[in-house]
Length: 87
Length: 342
Image (tube, rainbow over all chains, first blue to last red; front, side, top):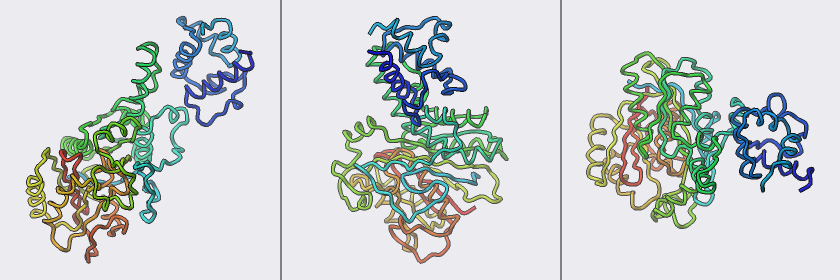
């Protein structure tokens, strides 16, 4: 899967997993922070995103420090998925 | 004495904030689903995680918790609670072989999620309890509220009844024969002469305390019983109508011809000048419909008028003081609630 395509799929998955009913994929910018001022996600959402990575891409994040580096924005998540995906 | 001061209801009809009994919203595929408001006061991040029962529970409670800051307890009756989330969570357990599961569906699926969310949104750390006794869940919540008021007079409590339709629960109850096999319009519910009813859902919330001043209504008696014998129901009705002069009888009849004998038994004892009202063509059948009936009773007592849409048998009376609600759930769990003008 091309990186651009992966990012679009990832946005759709985030909307579905986190039930972001008011958002469309094009509303989420690739470099927009997922937490805080950007999408405004919170700690429960970070758990949901970790489950998303495990279920959809076979990636298991066990170290919280690693999680903080990965779950920054769509770009960082897509980079990490490309390098570590097992499915 | 338990006095009702405020009441709010989210139902399949226009009952929230601007109550309009003149328009009948129709059932779709034998389901009467709630008309949900915009929930402008609930933070969007919190709202998107809420299942329907939590949404409609919090939504109906919000006007009360927003205004009354020192509520001494939140007492909710619900039989189904977040069934949709329960089934979603259980499916995940199966699909992912008890592996990594998302927390949201589990958190939203527990029975006490409604009362808990109301407590969290209002930063209320006092008594917080959920009664889950199926078709008597709301009545038991009402009992609890009455006992709390006896122990803690001069306090305000939030009392509510909430249930939702979920796909899996609908299928299970449908297989058990509790919903109609043929498609029936809620306009024709009482003439359908077949088994089963229409599925319904809703949420009604009440601000209660023991202060008569400015109250909308008072709850004079609550009786619950478990029986399949209509003679027992007749006996209870006789006792209540001999002790209290009833003006309006609210019947929980739901179009299921197997259960009509209980309602007929009650109605056979009523004097000619008592108005008979029914309501399940408005809200459908679910375990806490008596919360909807209580909301309707408060509306009749406050406005001193019975909406045409609920009249089964009219009366020449122009003032209404005592309203008796009788309901049964699945032919076994029965309740009487006597509500009077404050």
